[in-house]
Image (cartoon, rainbow, N blue to C red; front, side, top):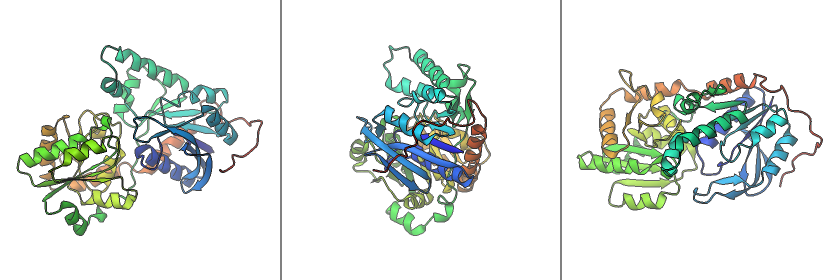
Length: 389
């Protein structure tokens, strides 16, 4: 089976979507399928990667997004997909790529779309209060579900806004985590001491520094802990539109902003050395960086208004993490409680073991084996192969 995945907001510094794409590609190929992924680039380019065939199309930078790109020409995008003649089409953008659904249906190509965001949360945060937010969100979600054969939600949190309007083609497919490259075995006393710089407790925040993820909450929590006499240091991994603001906020506090780290092994080692990882984003529908922390044996404190609590086993006798209200005091309370639990690191790893990427891949392949529209894409008139730039 030939599977094509299209994603905007994919780039050198992107996180969750890129990780998802790469791991699905590895899994599909392991099961004998062809995988192509079409993403924004600076020019037309085709290249073989370990994840599949990567096709980059000319794109434009989305203003205010922190250098995220979107494909410039939907016409070229549709032409490229048609030439590939996929058996299944996956889409990872509910906004700029929603038009692919009706087009693919006309070509008899079965489709799935990933709902990576909670639209209700985004609307509440960014739309003016005088607008009928609830009505607009339901309208958009009904339209999205009608345009694609299946909508993929990664958590119950993400699925809820579709289920409440009676969507019948919503499927839950939890994402996975790399259990090999993120491991408690990477915990190094030497690196830990280097990162702590003499402080006792090491806290890490890993993720994109953008307003909707509220990374400032991690800095506020560290400042609150220091006020309480807790000898803690915060290390922040990532970059984004809020970098400058956070750098200014960190002045005078034991907070290190490391920026984007391209080497995933270095990120994994830092996560394994931490006592606690923070995931303060209130709108997170999955948060792969939180899962990577758990796989590294590091418990997580997350916003209680996000989906992260679904895999922290917070009601278990020994949880893998904790959830907190969206304020510094609550996060500080949760950090202090979590660091007092002896077996929290063991339970963190156990929680991650329940979410291997292989399970995600198998669930997607089960879904793709349902002939919703047709078994194969039709042959197109042109046989010209996309040339590399």
